[in-house]
Length: 142
View 1 (tube, helix red, strand yellow):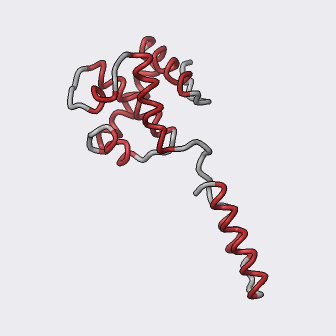
View 2 (cartoon, rainbow, N blue to C red; view 1 turned 60 degrees about the horizontal axis):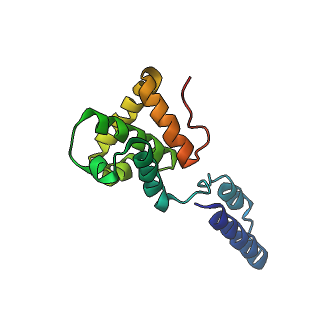
């Protein structure tokens, strides 16, 4: 739910409360408690991520969604999974984007966490891609 749709729903409930005289305070509070999606647009997120990955690594989206199991491709896929998760995609959606089963996306998420903490080259590429995507709080390098 976006902030705009949440505001519209609350307005409708307030108007309904006024018109009918019904006590909708609890329902309005429940709607106000709903977590709002971030302001960025998910539909363009995957292409923005793939573009940034290609600029930094030279590996295009076609290579990443292919069945190729070369290590450098699978490592970059792990980064892509992280960024897509950061944009709010589910593992099922990520699996569909990367032409893989959702359990592969879960595994790649685990691989990313391990690599970002121990592999300096991986971490540097990750930080470069994060800077291109203009994502805040994705610099996990310690």
